Length: 424
Image (cartoon, rainbow, N blue to C red):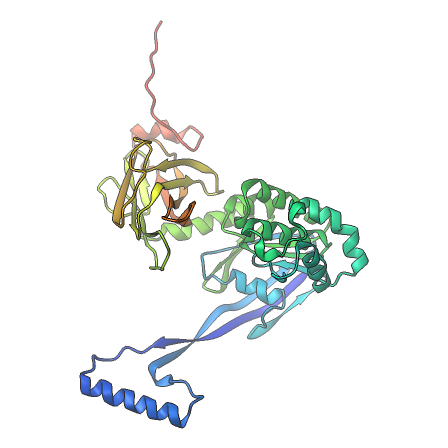
């Protein structure tokens, strides 16, 4: 059988350090320790103070065996840190594997981050030719595609402006246009499409479909399950650097969501020094207000959110979106829904939010949550301050009671109990 690419036991390891935890030192011990450290640095100025760290070997990928045939559209999914982007970097020759090898048959075009291969000081026009040359194209070949690239990117007005002045959306439009229009046999695309707007994302997916219909091969990394479902004919699920399952999109996407159902129903986010506001906790609570990743269809449940505001925010909006497995938005709720003209100002401090979802509203199935905080900081415009995409998965379950026959036989994402008036 002919393959577009193959990997054989690909592994990638990194060396990372951890600060050692020691007992609390008194003043005399601190002074003695610092004196020893100073003497050591004077004697060996190029040596690092390794006694403070424990060295660990971390495997980002382990035993990756993958075979992709020409024209296949393969999606790579998994949680953050699963190894998806590392695999694409190895396939695009940005980094070398620690073990194993990868073979690619044909010209490779990679779009792994916004503006890959672009020089910020050069104009958009110059970067098209530069990036095309990096991908192995001749000048005449690039000129033949030039007008099509510019039209697709929609940056014609700024074509002779240095790309360092482009917005992130303009940057990614031009970068994707170059990567997708220079006739690669293999196209590697990471989660860069999240930068573009909805219309541009649709255009990109359409272009990738066109590339695949021409017999090209696509490897696509994304957290957008709707895009994965529409584009890919095979999906590979990674977890902790290993392939744990692969197959048709529907089956593998369900397995991906099932990973989140094993959680406690509470996601505590790592503290970061984000300006404006920081999301700290996202949770699902049952009717007893206990965190759980599984709730009953005939009972109320609650969406839980805890966040911190670092500075006064005007025109603030805290929003929670509930999505289906394929990424379709079921509904969006905001903290200003009941009083649109109030609570638009958030003062610095810690906040907790609880949203009640009524019984029989969501049908049986698996869902995920998006959360975002938008507001205007002093001296800045109104911007997205923090967000969490498909951060927490949960399942609405049937219980088998007679009262639930209303949900058991009807399709739909929502199955509300509505008031009827029936007269004869």
